[in-house]
Length: 77
Image (cartoon, rainbow, N blue to C red; front, side):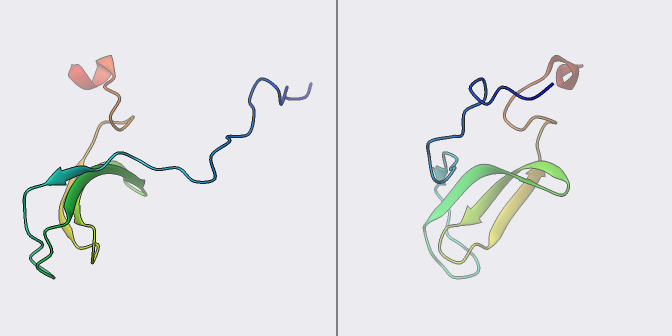
């Protein structure tokens, strides 16, 4: 039994992006004021990061829930 490609169409956007929230801090590495907070996914799962948008220095990294910004009922127990 094959997969119905009409049920799961190819995304129309060429790239994916996430909303980044500006943070009122200066980067300790390069001094830039272009610092933002946003979720990323990596080997350890979802992580909320605060990163310099110029030199990509990580000011902080905190483990997020199993589904990133989606809160599961099991995360609240």
